[in-house]
Image: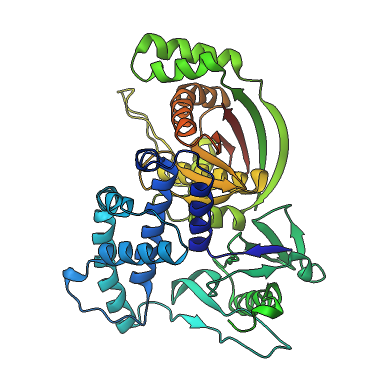
Length: 240
Length: 220
């Protein structure tokens, strides 16, 4: 059985652990630590993408959105919530983070506008979400089913868990319906002719290029069944 | 289609002399050449540690996760390349394409973005499977390619790939190893409580369904 945490939580936990085990906690030493730098930049990048991909967030179509500033503030809040004290260093990090990410931020802002237009014109596939079932006899983790590709040409299916805290994956639970290959993530889960991949953040994936319609329907149903079988909360987490 | 991936591993442990050479190699060609010789002598021979059957589904997912460039159907690109380079285009039904020019500089080459993407995907896949590491960061157009963590260890991973011969791949490894050693040495000094391991993963795409990856582990 494996405990899965979302990618952001994993990075935050690592930063906290990494700082806790340092002998030299002087500002100079921490600033020069490239691992901390890489983690902070990655957190801001992930947050920018979350902001840009949030379908429920209403943005004015202006370039003054400044996704980068918003993401840096959000990451600062996350660090504080996790009691990761970088103190005044956070203001130091802003300059290198901005230098690394400002052009990417502009690209995301441009693409965001195009994404909104694509959705309005029906050029891309609709996103689908499951709903959390809080029945304590049937606990499950909510997830999103994403169809990759255009409406005429589906490249793949991805399932992403939506939970923001730890949950369990027990690969052995599907051993009676799937051939499992691999000793660690990513695992291949082979069900008849369909090959699914499950990764260390709980993401499920299958390539559906050139699938006939009947096989596509089977893949669609099977990936959801796999998600419902694999993603489990501990019963004490039912309050989430 | 399954790809057979043969994985070879070598290890380099830098002693005090090696660390000193790593630092001076960054500034002076003589020291860089000495460091290269030192590494060749210190590295253990590559030995086969595993043969893995890699599903195309798995490789596609790993390329999506770890590649830093936009590439559509990289596996199919490489298959197409090997169809041409294996002479199949001389057969009926294939386009009559010829690329040699009078100038030796005009050479056909495979899609380098696709080759690089596959190399990065395989590097991430092997880091997860072999070291049970998880991605911490994917520096954007920076160094190294991937930063991963497993327990208290940090893995700094640099990925290379080529459709050229294994001998030419060995040359790529020799050229790249010094730079990674210098970086690992610097990171180790700044985070002495953390075990920092440099991993150079060089993948030779032998043909459309046979790859070999040479892993060089660098530890101080």
